[in-house]
Length: 137
Image (cartoon, rainbow, N blue to C red):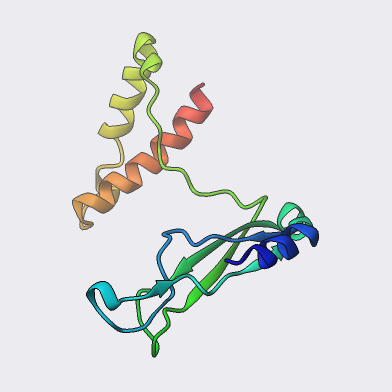
């Protein structure tokens, strides 16, 4: 990127959304010493847009279109939460009630999981256990 373009970006409070995996988006199709590859595609957003709207991420698509690899821009709202799986806290083992809770949970509802795959059974039981642990804490 030229210094003139960098100055314009700075003066106008723009943010260059760098690709997730930095790689050239253009090359001249040659190999070895004759190969020229550059990152010529960018997403420029105003800094207030990034601050107010959310998190942006740029990604370079691995599929070539002519001599370019396209880039995509994805957005995730700031208030969007990711689903987090069950997280185990080893402090729970210090409380004897916790072991009883887990044993009781896994010994009940056997009929409900008959006919589903073992992986689906684990997912079902972990989701239910997560809710039980939240109430227990």
